[in-house]
Amino acid sequence: MLEIRDIKTTYGKIAALKGVSLDIREGGLTCLLGPNGAGKTTLIWTISGILKAQSGSMKLAGEELAGLKPHQIVEKGVVTVPENRLVFPEMTVKDNLIVGAFSRRKAKGGVEEDLESVLDRFPRLRERANQEAGTLSGGEQQMLAVGRALMARPKILLMDEPSTGLAPIIVEEIFEIIGKLRDEGRTIFLVEQNANLALDYADHFYLLEQGHVTFGGQPGEVDHDELIARAYLGAR
Ligand code: ATP
Image (cartoon, rainbow, N blue to C red; front, side, top):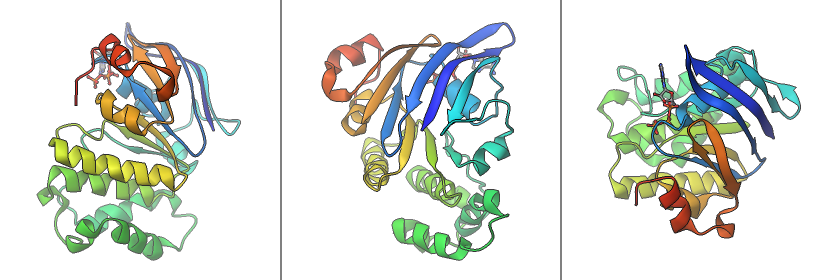
């Protein structure tokens, strides 16, 4: 669905992505694993248009995304759930969700229905709909960040390390939510350091090391321990 080819992204003279190619397949969960500093967040920011690739292409169902502005990429249906959630802390839960529908302002209507469906999916958000988002727990803020992305009616969800800073039991809960979205047939690209857990849910994975994709496949094809050791990834 999204074909990423030979993407190079730099910060000044520092080359963070040195020619990354991978495929995000339709209706599946593709995981990107890799140690700190490998370039995982840089790739998410490049796909979402916040960082500009120096070269390479990113084709969504054949249509080039490279060079588009972040809001245009969201309008195409590529929507990010950023690391550390980045909810608007002083806005209510409900208003945070409504902001998520902003990208489809041209296609008016359906916002109330989508809001209801997100609140049905996350009853804890419904209970807290009028509460300021900054007062939610970390796990609830992660749910809100996912819900906000769903309000944009994404074709692809890009999730950047949703487990960051959450207690293990909450991480399990977030992964159950991700698993459910995958089971519904959504297309998800998940960046994750918790390789053990990610490999339990992934349909496909890639390993990113020092700005290069060094390995890719299906979880069943590889020795997980070896993969995890190779990437120096944290254990569950
Ligand atoms: P982590 O798992 O720790 O979040 P990551 O795989 O997401 O790591 P990136 O944050 O994408 O890695 O960073 C990739 C490389 O780019 C690193 O070497 C990092 O130091 C460098 N880098 C990231 N942001 C900047 C920046 N704003 N300016 C300069 N270099 C940067």
